[in-house]
Image 1 (cartoon, rainbow, N blue to C red):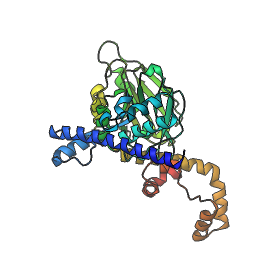
Image 2 (cartoon, one colour):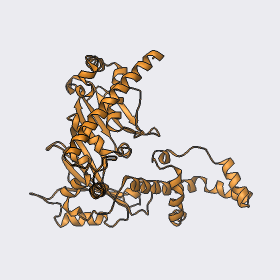
Image 3 (cartoon, rainbow, N blue to C red):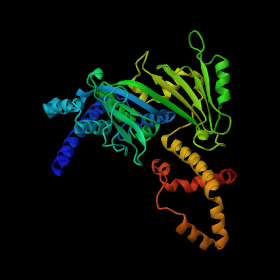
Image 4 (cartoon, rainbow, N blue to C red):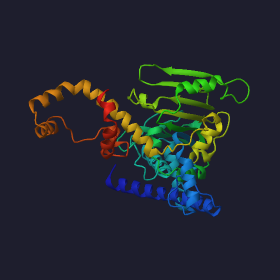
Length: 387
């Protein structure tokens, strides 16, 4: 692509981005006039009590997976863009990779501005019954979803999927909800998760609740399934079958991340649209749908902010990394310590011999940086020393 073409594409993309914010501002203004305060929104003025209450409610659970579809016609304003938008969509439908990438970039920027997420410029093939797709990447380059479009059977629609690592970078779900609702999109899957980092309730409790009929609503009790091994790598209990409607998944998140001594359990409700519509409100108030559909989880009251969850994930990953480092490098480090018994000489030797000036991907992608590692190591070093 020439310099002139790149400049033209950038100018077009800037125009498309502006349309998303116009739609979002219109919805926010409408809701503000109705005195509705969206949780997780930043910048909307209202009473302190109302805003704090909404923030507390939203913090009880997080959106951990999102899939939706909408019509390609919503991506351009016919008044502003004229027939240019029609030509762009037509070119994308014919397989023009520049047009496909441009539309994918616009979609991501519209739903998750200032998130650090970006679209892989390589247009790839078949995905979720769509002819073309572009992968969504985290700031560190981890694949965390996709935008797909194309194919006669899809009738001019596009599909967006964000995995848990992608959802972790969305900072304003109120904005995302407004844009998605403005597009008239269909939510086809949304996962809502609460993190019990202290392990107040375990998988044994989930099995007990099932045997007591606390997951039964009408008719027969839901099926219960199990996965994993009791070897410290993490186990899972499933309530309900994964048939496109809803399912509760309780699993040992900390152990799954590599810390066999972690008490962290995640309770994740997976909502599908096979038999019912998923309301847009779930993106702002996931805890209401998690507890509302599974009343036995009404004990959920501890705050579970995205920052706290990311910190716990980082701690578990650090524990796993230290165990692997001990196995792979422990003897080498000991040899260096023997060769340089003075603390300053040892530190200098380690810095020169073993240090690489690059953060691990799991640190860089967490959005917290290396500064969070010192308090984590300081407060729980005894756990890591004995692993």
